[in-house]
Length: 338
Image (tube, rainbow, N blue to C red; front, side, top):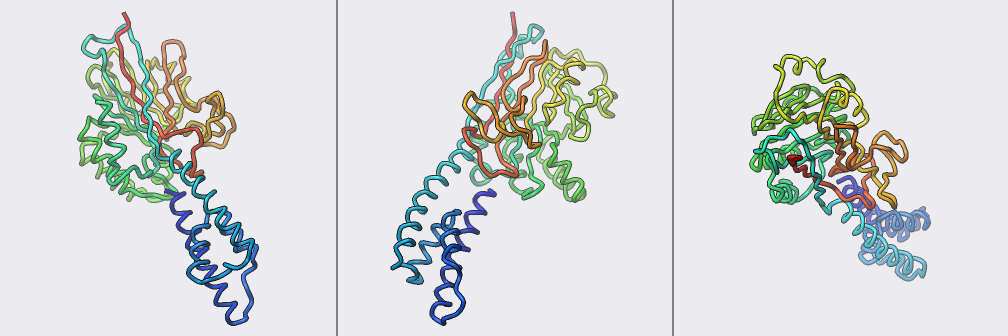
């Protein structure tokens, strides 16, 4: 959505600038430099600039404007199309997780992971995203943080997603770093949001462990990352579980060693947005913490008996573009390993 806001603002600005410059020309007042009028078209405002030239009959006889503005109008159209496609073309990645101790009744069990939505708009009431999830026929949906964004917060989009998701399957949600920042900014508003989505049926499992369908599901809050799950206040009160599979939800993957030591079978994370730009060889360019070529950017990693799956996520935060890195729904299929 950041990109959409930028394009609206830059094109409105271009249109106004061309109109103001025309008025100044008619009154022989100080003019806006031509370099600025060209620059605003080059930087994404070619549509506003072109419309300004037509509406105000301004700069239409000058060769450089007649060449530059239409040229960048076409180039902007191509770039915007590629960027929007990169940001909104939803894909699904399926991983198979084998476990010898898995009960027969869980063979083929489907978990859909949603991560890093960041208020991204996928149709009215998130209908496009929800339809994609529904096609995966999940038994449960797990949400691994950053559903809302702290810099351009829109709780309404997140609420629409959760309201639709609970109609598909049970939903389990943990916080990410953006939720933590929102708590710091306005804890009361964030708590109201959590109460609202819980009223839909969402299970907010920060620092909690629950048993569902023979799976031990552990949620690690953003504030508890790196701590042993057995030291978390709501986890240590749980009785020991005989579940076959321990699934840990932890927004940031960098703390994987802790969960390996705790005996996790499967860890689901996100956070790094696939490296934002996927280079040839499918390597991510930069992490959410602005580290280049992050090791844990996306995909699956094996640590002995523990498998880590990192979602590329759905939305963006600081950088409003994805390159070679389509927004991703992750589906995990549990298989009994014979």
